[in-house]
Image 1: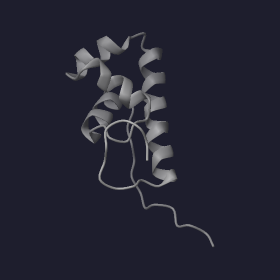
Image 2 (image 1 turned 90 degrees about the vertical axis):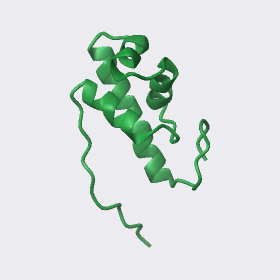
Image 3 (image 1 turned 120 degrees about the horizontal axis):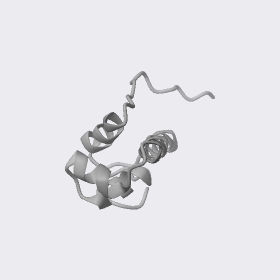
Image 4 (image 1 turned 45 degrees about the vertical axis):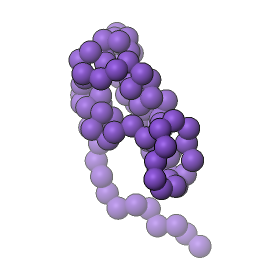
Amino acid sequence: MAQGKRISVDIGNEALGAIKALGEAARAARLAAGEGQAAAAARLGVHVQTIGRIEAGEAGVAIGHVLGLLALYGLAVRSGPAATPTS
């Protein structure tokens, strides 16, 4: 399980990879906008540590905070069915 806030279920590697990718995208967008974590936190209305946790790809961060941070920098997320494992 990923470090950080404890969550009640085990998350598969594919989902953990997606969470990490969202965090990396958020960080890249924030840096491209020339903002620090403190500015992003103030704009989103969260603690600066929350921004760091999102950007680190921690699985226990509230999805609203993750999506809110992405939206601040013009990023969106599309959902779809999970990939089916191949045998």
